[in-house]
Amino acid sequence: MNFRIFILLLLLPVLTVCDLNVENPAPDPRTNPEYANWLIPKSEIVVRSSVEDLVPPLDNPTFLMLPEATYLKEDDRVLGVNIDGILRAYPISILNYHEVVNDHFQVADIMISYSPLTGTAALWDRGNMKGFFSSFSTSKYIFNSNHILFDDETASHWLPMYFECVNGTLEGFDPETYPVVETSWKNWKSMFPGSKVLSNSTGFDFNYYLDPYLAYQISDSIRFSTKPLDTRLPYKEKVHGIIINDRVKVYPHALFGDSNSIIQDNFQGLSVVVVGNNSQKFIVSFERRIESGIELDFSPVNGPAPNILIEDQEGNQYDLFGLAVEGPDKGRQLKSTNFLYGYWFALAAMYPDPVIHE
Image (cartoon, rainbow, N blue to C red; front, top):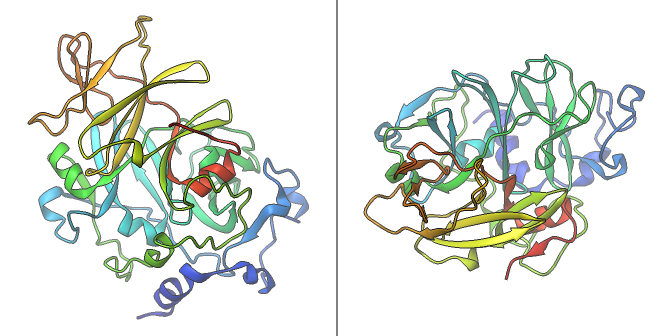
């Protein structure tokens, strides 16, 4: 086992703010005049590690057809994406070690990130940022437990849970985002058997079978300064949060059963449908009003086709990404809400005073 693996496996789960006392030869963006303006409080940015490249991104990912991914177990979690009809899955067992994947699709160059400390993911276009094209990496700084990223082209800093550049040349820029759905490997395979999955042949000598965050996931421990801490739900409960005008409404897994079930709701004037399934480990949400102005009513579908989740009053049936795969308006695309899925404590800290659906 090389030194980097040893450090990652033994220190990542237990790193604390004591790293602030380690000498750092690189300029500190919190105090460097070149980084004077931040959209988040500089005093609340903490150092995650003294090692700048502790978490290396994946810049040239390769993919397998699903039957080839024998390294995955049925209950492993994956992040699923659909970009212009191209479906790919990114196992969290790999993302725990890299946190950022710089990927390429025919229609877009994308960055997908996963923050193990907050349990949240983000996905955006890295090829069209005010004329900039860039790859992303994980910095050694965090804010409210969410990793702060930087782009290699401008060295601007980005906060994934805000989907925004918070410091640097592109400060305030909101990239084009895409929905990313967390679900079980078993469910993804059944829904999208023709898709591809990230290969574990990454060129790095990491043991992707070993989860360095397992103890963190099952405890109430929060490793870094995060505030405010909202105690209305268990800190590590996974919730789906719909974000509108910097407010968030969360939908805990306890609201859903072990079959497809829905909640039709209104938040901040937006009518939404939230679809969840505990046994398949997913929650997704879509706007109910379509371009024609019609507001659709939905009912859950639990039939033989695993990729069909809901049906509208017109007889259209929709998949995990809100695409009508059957019905008179086959091909219709529901608009995804702006959402985050992750640990309750993280969403409640980043978007204080959240509404909990009951």
